[in-house]
Image 1 (spheres, rainbow, N blue to C red):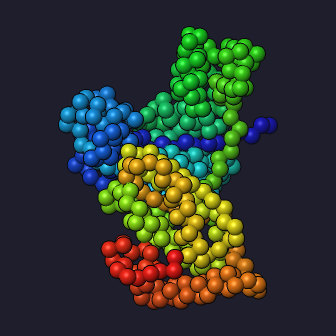
Image 2 (cartoon, one colour; image 1 turned 90 degrees about the horizontal axis):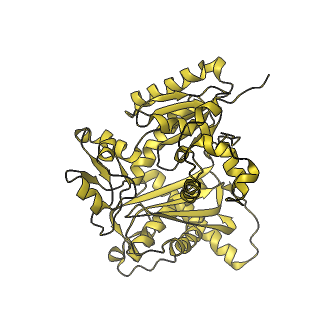
Image 3 (tube, rainbow, N blue to C red; image 1 turned 60 degrees about the horizontal axis):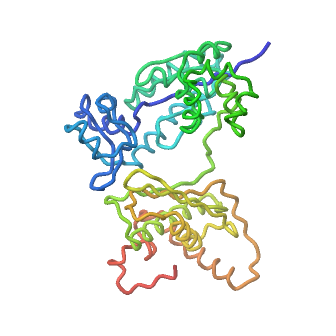
Length: 399
């Protein structure tokens, strides 16, 4: 007997706007737009359903959104706030299954609850239980769907947005997808939809009627992918979020591209990463720096360390290189996040070279600083490079 998977897709519609309204209940029922304020070419990052019904959509220039709805409330994006809410939702989901995959500040979650029926009950009851837990403990009201694969589950939540639930039973995927428009299928890009529209193909059933050989004519590289997508063929597993990731972030009170200030922030983030690594007797084998600009656009730079380390000074030098690599625009930066993925155990070995001996002395100093912070608080001592240039005066830090 074939055993089908049970995949829940959880979606908090208009996530950023929903979080802001949750924290400011007086905005409920009014059109709310999340977008950078004071930027001449700002675009809409997110909006609530009221604003959407007035013709405002994501990616629309903010000036046009103001023309369509003159009484909108515009709030700046607060990325660290959205990440904290994502973490809180993930905490509720982990109480039901360890296999939870989340997006990045977008309110989307996949849960694989296959085989948990004897513990938590039928899959539909688990989904409803999770929805109620999130509403009770966090205050948000997510959409949920249940299917045997991630693709079909995601399509189902798109059908019932912004409120509702949908269950697609195993074996019903073909009938469920057949009458739907193609744009609901995740994985079909704008170019794919345009090309299919040129052939007057607008529904999933129409494309499904084509053979693989026929699809190879307009799509020589993506024929097999499109062939599988319109049939709901999806074996992608739910990939749990990494628990062995060390991450720290900073949200600027005022968007900035001041080089000195950004270096101070990167120094502070490097110090936090280093302290957490040393506390767990680990070392960083890689670093990633994510930047979020005023207009909502994001950029990333990653680097593999030549030698795994927990030395703040080495981490800082690497992070500065990442900053120079990731900062390719002149737009102000709102949010920075520094991440160490898959840290490795710290290995102590005999010192053969003078440079290694120097780093060991630095680690000794940093360990002493950790002890001071543990006793007197995180702000008791810090590197001079973490201070704003106006506060450093003549201090010359070895970083």
